[in-house]
Length: 313
Length: 251
Image (cartoon, rainbow over all chains, first blue to last red; front, side, top):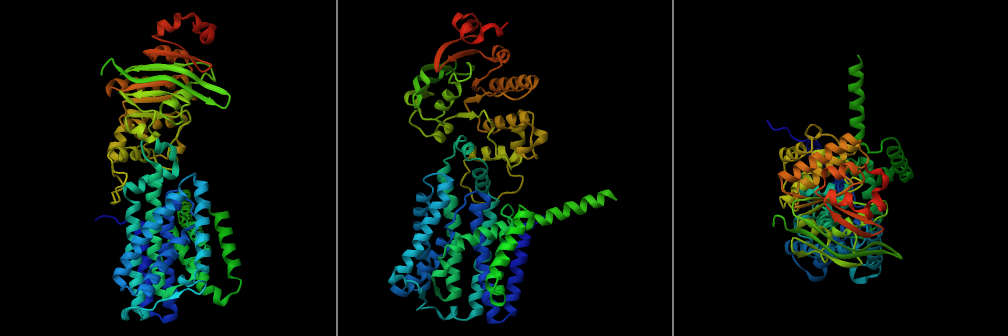
């Protein structure tokens, strides 16, 4: 029998747990789970840039928010039905992503970090002042189809689409393109002198990664029954980085763990413990200080220690 | 094109501010030869190499590769024409295994850069190991590139470029930093590969013994100028070369 890769198995297991718990729990727990599942996709999409390709974007929130906003705006302003609206949203997000990508990738990777942050911040401010886009209040779904009103069906849809997208991300990482992504992280100049147009390669990586974030954003808008400025907030960009660093950006499973911990702290611990941000800070500090490669590396470290002890006996 | 000119450098110059690093150099590289560039530190050898493969943009002059003017092409397009460069400081994909380094080049050659479909873990591994074997690294295929010894890193760097099957291989001091015996071994390997794959090699080298042993023709540079080009015998006889560079060190 063919052996299934450990990280894929881990991801399927985690999604299995989210699915079972989602079926068994109340509305409030499902709401938290919905966010965790969406954040898992968000973090994994970000890690395509961050961990695999070495592109430190601080503007990932822009694409997350964009997905939800574009969908809700075209549905509520123009009364377009859900399915054509979804297709239009993906198309619009694609065009905007490529456009933003071309601007951000014009110069060095350092410039990329700040350009992506600048554009995300500008978009957040612009939407906040733009009455048509709901300004600081946000936009609520006007014409939500019947089947999207129940919290269980909504969660089922979110869960299914996220799972499919996460599997797709896993497959991309195993492809020749995934190998080139790592090449771009390790040594861009070497790639150039192998005859690869590195700027184009980076633009494709950026677009793929951001489109998955846009899908996560669309699902998040389903969950919230609308698009709100919180989904565009640049603090989400930092959360993406933190999720990857905490879990371990060099491992496929890292962001999955990071997304769970961060979302859990933000959505549950924050309601019972007012100093939750301090708790998060402490966790980041300990993880980065003690285990440079994130929580997943703890498994490898323990295994190594166990093996050594066994060998010593 | 055997015996013809594969690379023609025409009146190329490069200024860095007020400094003229390469001054009106014209040079022909013949198809299939091992061509050494020698000169003291600061003679402009490395800059000349960078100008040829457009790592640096020339201030003036022209480079013709296989009858095509490549001075207007971006660096990656030049590599696609069949001119590959090995760097003075090894530029590897450090965190990846040796075979994965070569595999990236193989993926490129197969034209599968934008192939998004998943592959097995040993995808192209056999082919990568074949390339590693030709530089004597087959048994280190699964080692992390950045942990290899310095000499092995140089070999791996050569393997990555070989995977593309270039027509012209540019080597910036392939034996720098390795023991002389291993330097000889690396040069011998390069010469064998060049003969077998009909590859032209242009290399910078400081070790005169290696140069006179392995080069078919030698070009001498001094202060950004091209002094002379000729067979090892001719270069040895050239009085200006003897004064300017070789001096009393050459027996």
